Picture 1 (cartoon, rainbow, N blue to C red):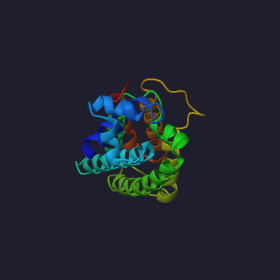
Picture 2: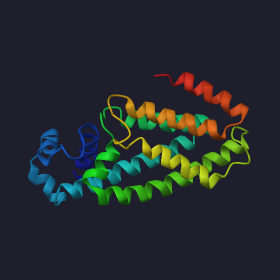
Picture 3: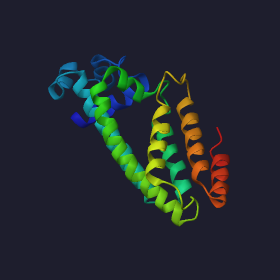
Length: 201
């Protein structure tokens, strides 16, 4: 039951936001009593914390699965972006921004884990792209990783962006294009153009 509550809570939080969803909303969605939820979670913050951790682990597993499918480095990045697009397709706002605003401690913890995972994934992707001749050999991999992470996280800043349906997807595609153009070889740019055409809105 705890797992079911976490999965449903995560889905509802992504769709409606961390602040507006109440324990009553989650209980009603599951057709259970609120008392049942409180058997597993002492308050809403604890539920948010564990639901976010579950979502985070789900995303990590999905990313690792994509990385094991044999795509070239540029295709791989677009497949990962599309995975996030599907996960957040019902969100009108940035879940990360809401988390930072209303649950800063949880956001801080997640961001530390996020950079650690992101760093490993991007490092592997850069090495793959260089070996495939898609990225230039002389790039500063550590700096590129930090730049890309900063850009990717900037799409969740509501001081910079106004969100509506598909905003996150468009911003993430623009960030990925910007990142790839900065490091790609001519061969890589050709594949980038193919991916952009394939992923037109």
